[in-house]
Length: 68
Image (cartoon, rainbow, N blue to C red):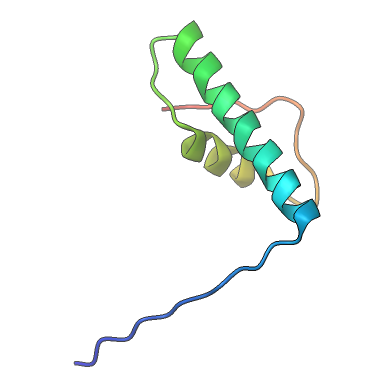
């Protein structure tokens, strides 16, 4: 069977870069707060994935429950 590889290159505008950096820092801070204030361990990628799962119909709820 053939081995098929796919690559995608993303080129970000400066505005997109700044927005994504801010989002990453926010996810890192949320993860740090969760780890400091509870007995769970969560990382920024998990925080982002769970917040992203809550994004529906161009809306994001104000309260999001994160889980390990």
